[in-house]
Length: 390
Image 1 (spheres, rainbow, N blue to C red):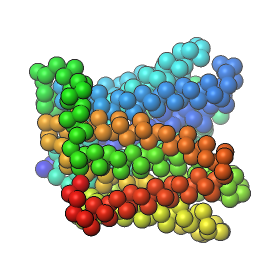
Image 2: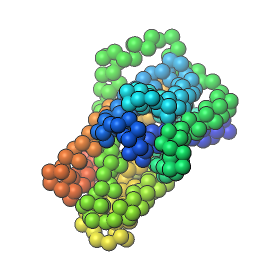
Image 3: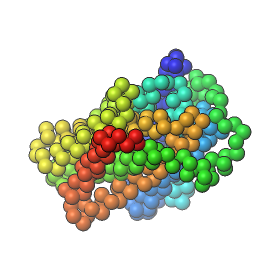
Image 4: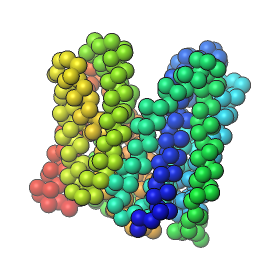
């Protein structure tokens, strides 16, 4: 059912997702000014940012449950509103303790969006792969916009003004969404919220073999995504001895390709199937990481980074696969629970790859990422070859 309202919903959900990402990503380039303002270490600000991302991951499951109970529109509006308010609070935080509190609240607000928005869109479209691809493209788009915009504002008006970028973007999007999107009917309006958080409910949602298999693949992919987003520029500066400017340019290329290929892989998964499309992205990952590890010269690195950007667009086909595996009545809680599981566990990618780089160097650490892509590719191939039905 691809109506005008559905297309409007997709556009506004994508814009809302970009707003929640911009609000979070705007903080990172302003860390030096924030540490000076509050007289704290980089580690202290890093702790606050870790809490923000942890809260974001943990809120995926509640987002789905609340969408079932209250209707997705209310949850999405709450996410946009809380993102704007928390960004304002961060900008006026009088001390480090308040900064930590408000940054954590930002993680909560941003975390409410994605699961509810995805289940909302799944009700309106049959070709959910391409829809998820467009929706999730809001993340790399924010990666291209937020750091440069926040830095430019901060240079002229100070870091607090740079943080307000999240609020400035959230306000018009909130009113657009509120005025242009019709109220949605909840799937479980009378069921107590706590019922969806019981051990039996959670275990039932995860127990299906195909769900467990796909969640395991998503964990490995999320692990690789997290490590790549954290250390790709450092790999080029320290591992391949490129200048910071060239490394930054390659990182921007990664985000650009990542953003463009999300909708492409999503559409391809609707046409060719979720698993073959995921396998294609994994093959691109093996080629990409291999190229930047053994290749030499900027053209080879650019090809490798572009391949990695394609590989890290795995979210469109894999998330579509997860949506397919749940009934409409369980889709909100099920999809949200799986996202919480693979995002929380996948966050270990930064820690593991960082430690491996310290102990054994960047070649070893990034070789693990290539190997993980290979493992996922082999798992998908084995599932098809032996007709396991997972």
